[in-house]
Length: 311
Ligand SMILES: N[C@@H](CCC(=O)N[C@@H](CS)C(=O)NCC(=O)O)C(=O)O
Image (tube, rainbow, N blue to C red; front, side):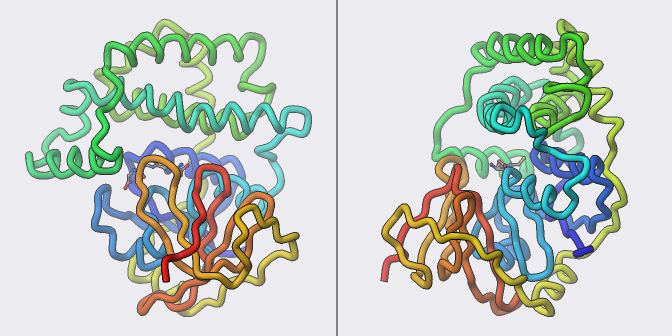
């Protein structure tokens, strides 16, 4: 089995989604801690610019975005599945809603003064200021949703999750699937990182009971690794052969072209490289880094923009 390296930090909700999925699939993994804010020189040596959390590394293959990481984990360990056959489309759609609307709403609720005070308890004021400035820049200067608006929306979303749990332990049945991991992580942040804000969960006891079931899945077997060691592992490795899949050209950009890929909202730091694959669901860029060597950096199509690099 390939060695899995997760680049993350403990308080990241999206990282918690992946940590729990590795627990669900009983995968052993290496843990590399990355900074919460820019600069992230060891991470961007591997991604070519993408800076979000988490990133999965397997040798010289780098997987950006948790939606793609779900697919990679599913390929590595198909059982237990993240994508139950009967509900595959609906499960992915709920997961996408949870990673966007639910996440944004929960974070607007969590980042009220009492929540921020807990999250940064004991941290110097400069750290808090740097965090706020970093995230404001990531949002392109846009304000967060007002907490007064977030409160009512979050409560509605929690009731919807509760109604999905009537008569079953998980959102789509007796076993957790991709939707459960995506819906759990923003609520996990409320409950464990900003407990001063967690009273909002009490009105939906079904949700609290489901959260306890999700938490019990655990994180499987973790071994710490330094960022330097991870970069060296990439350098020593060769990217895995690309799967033989049909090239799906939606942009009029040929394979072999220099291109730029960036997220389509929030955190637009681009990655530039040679387009070596564009399948139905993902893009792969080949690029070289002085420290990490030749890499294949993979992105999902959904949520990302692809453009020709300017000459
Ligand atoms: N769509 C991305 C979202 C990831 C995301 O927004 N992660 C947050 C942390 S939970 C982030 O990157 N924050 C800024 C940072 O860590 O630099 C995914 O599914 O991986």
